[in-house]
Image (cartoon, rainbow, N blue to C red):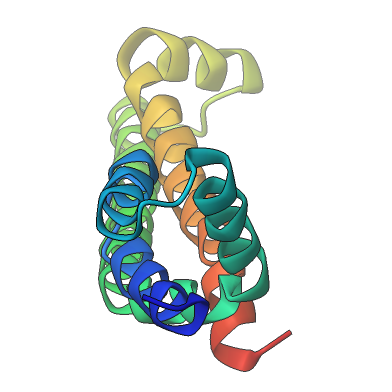
Length: 142
């Protein structure tokens, strides 16, 4: 195997998320070359072809990010909706508008989980967007 064949092999298997050490061992056994030589070639291939490897992985990454993003939006909206329902219920039950102190008491005694839901949903949305930054850069070749 020459370096071009090894490079193509590495790109294919790195995009399939194979273990790099296993790849190096396999090439060392096939070619009889030293571990350090093949490992440095792997690192060079990984650095030079990072966008191509990421682009080949992107269908799975896009699916995971999309599911996470949609779930985060859903959790955030659901939590905000529950928060509004609790506040409407308590303000309507008293027959008069609730005070700010009453609002905080209601939120922390009965609807504290909505804050966790909002934080979780926001975290999911931001994590999905941040995690996809590398994939979008590879797709758009930045």
